[in-house]
Length: 161
Image (cartoon, rainbow, N blue to C red; front, side, top):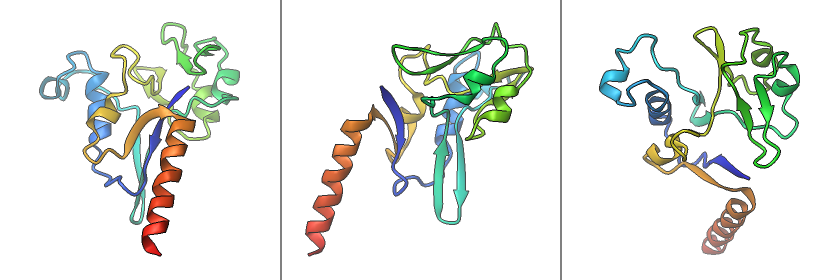
């Protein structure tokens, strides 16, 4: 399964990902018109900062997703094939049990219903990843990403000696 992964050393906290996320989930899909839409488009990625460290956080599509278990209407389900946590907003009753149990605090309220990162399913590729100016975000298989990071670490380690 592909994941949106973060390289903390590259994240500047510019929030471009937040802006692109909201625009991608707007009616018009255009920045200049999206800002005047009513209701305003909502971001589904959140850049948090702790001193000099910035961290973009979005739905992690947990293996044992507490939001799916807590969802009494069945609006949140786990796709057995992809492992993604899917949200059917038509089934959402706005109880926000999912918001209360999400360990990352990334499920939000949007027009009295839950909303979360859907990895830009309608578009086909997470727009936050494409828009990141420093390439701090990537959309990759975890083992492939981990191998690349090990090679990068080893290269940096050998260069220091």
